[in-house]
Length: 219
Image (tube, rainbow, N blue to C red):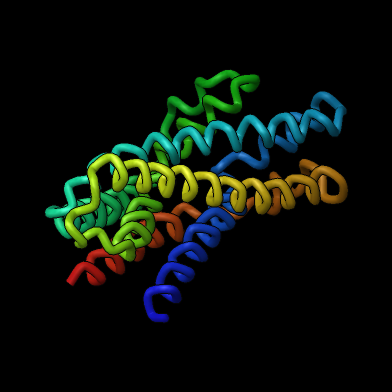
């Protein structure tokens, strides 16, 4: 029962982080609104959201898949999780000190929203935040019984990594899409200039918190 509850809590954490990323303007939903308003087409908003989701999903997968390969080293599960937690904490501290947004994001053409979303997720450590959660999900699976065949363990963890990336991205797109639709239909661009909210500090502290919790849970 404890293990079932632990897995459920970890999957809820995947969804919650997706909603959190979606609400954050830095992940791109205002760009979808701007695209629709400039082109005066509601369909442009959905196309933009789809492009943002595709880029975000690619970034999550690019971060999680290497760890799914590493997790095959079952004898080093704890060391890998500790290393991942330390990386997340280090990135959180860096973002807390350096508040400037990466300048290269401003150089990406407006019509390449998928590429922008991928780079933004990478730069802000969105995928890295999921790594300790993903490792926690994998850690609830019993791999001690004879060290299950390597290919079986690896394929299972790859599927888990893809599932985590997909569920997270769906939650992010739903949250960001809801805000984008609300701004597009009722609030307009003035809301983006006057009602903009900055989550940079909260984001950095969230990375540190996730890393610390993951680090403590390895003991």
